Amino acid sequence: MNEMNLFMFITNISVVLLCGALLPVLPLLTRKSFLFGVKIPPEAQSTGEAKALKHKYVFVTAFGGIVVFAASIIQYVFAPNYTFYAVLLFPFVLIAIQLAVFVPNHSKALELKSQLGWNVSEIQYAETINSFTRGNLSAMPHFWYVMSLVMVITSLIIAAVQYPNSPDMIPTHWNFNMEPDSWLPKSLGTILMMPLINLTILAFMWLVGVLIERAKLQIDHKEPAKSFAQHTKYRRLMGHSIGLLTFAIVVLCIVLGFQSIFVGFAVPLWLVMAIIIVPTIPVCVISVRAGQGGTLLKVDVIETDTVENSDITGSNAMSNDKYWAWGLFYHNPDDPACFVGDRFGTNLGFNYSRLPVKICVAIGVAALIVCYVWVILLFQPLL
Image (cartoon, rainbow, N blue to C red; front, side, top):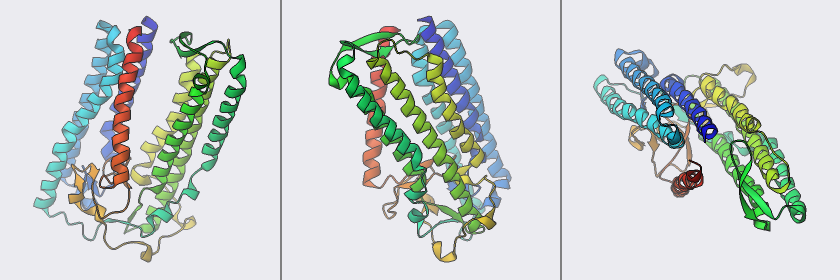
């Protein structure tokens, strides 16, 4: 019990520290043509009104992060048995704090744009005509996913071959000392469960890589060649980082699966954590160093492909504020794209008017709810 609570506490404060440190710097990572989801001229960022909004956001999110971090410590000291619920709840508290300051700032930015006449007709990021061919799947680092798929298939074969020699009761859960504490009767489904789950995770991570590669490019009219080069470098760096993380997750699932089918095979908890944490570091570092769409990256334009004027559309529907609810959610039925760049931070987003997006988001939300319920039911007997 104490070991589990301590592990949960370490996990909780790690997440709170990471998110709490990242939220205040998001305005610095966002393109200078956006102010809390509102399209503005880049030079408007230096006005006192824009700086005041950013200062308010930084203060509230930083203060909120400190409060949540303190609450995590207080909760563990006085109610350690509830640490599991803190892990599930506190990330949503941070999200709520961010939204509580972002949404009013977005409304205020819209007012300032109207009052101060922040015209963006000649200062805009535009989409490339061949946005999807610019970000085609051939540029993805496929070898990460190929290696992962080979390992998953190999683990399926090994599990099937080992089935006759596997124990009659198959371990399905381990405590924080990596000792089995739950079993199921041997069956082919039980043996192949982990490899099949691993295959599903691999497919999901591949889709994340596709999303990064296929999101529409937003090219700076003033420096199109540099902007395109930054996009290219960002996608390459992030693509390899996601690929490495995918490979690490596949390896972890295989190792955990072998604990079920090979008697006496055990993996220490520190190794399990290292396999996940180490590959996550490049993803976080690149997100912060690169900025939104790679706008903070240094590139050598001379050695990169240029963007011809004919490749850039004269108008950009994504520039229109009316298509962005709260500056966060893009909804444009006339835009065929499913994946787009967000207006805040470094994330990619969706065109929520597209049916495939609606279906995937609904499935994702349902899956999140199911996972939360499943995890609560799974850990409840251990609390």
